[in-house]
Image (cartoon, rainbow, N blue to C red; front, side, top):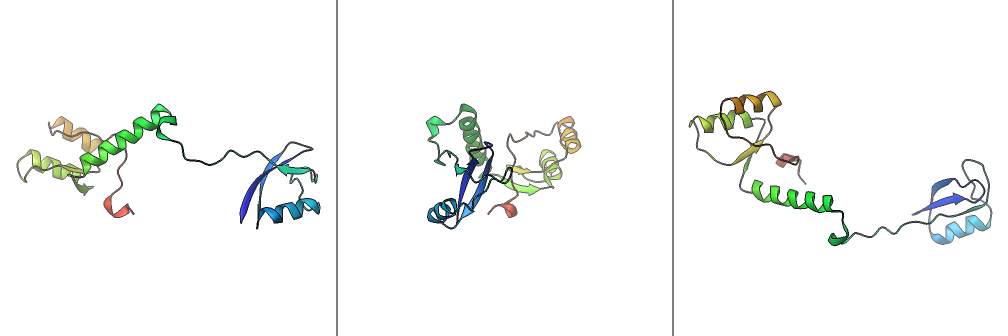
Length: 138
C-alpha cells in the first residue's frame, strides 16, 4: 500500500488517500473515480510532498543537537548507577546516614520527598531528562 497527499484543483482542499500502487492511483484518476471529499470534484492531482530523508547532524537545529548531547551524557552517567525506582528517597537517606554503603543510584521521588532530602542535607540532583525504568526499556 502507498499513501499519497492529494489536492483538489477546484477547491484547493488537501487530503490523503491509500492505493495499492502508483498504477492503481493512475487508473482511478483516469476513470474519474477520485473525488474531493469536501466538494466532490474529480479534478484531483498529487500534492507536492517533501521527501522524508533523515537530516545530517550539521543540518539539525542547535537545540536538537544540544538535547542529543545531553541525553548521551546522561546515559553515560547512568551506566554506573543502579535503578532503585520508588525506593530512591529511602535509599539516598540510608546512604547519607551511613546505614548502607554509598553508591551511585537513580530512581523516582515525589517533590515532597526530594524537598525533605534537600532539607536534611542529603546530596541529590534532578536528572535533566526523563529516565525509563529498566523493565520498560526495549
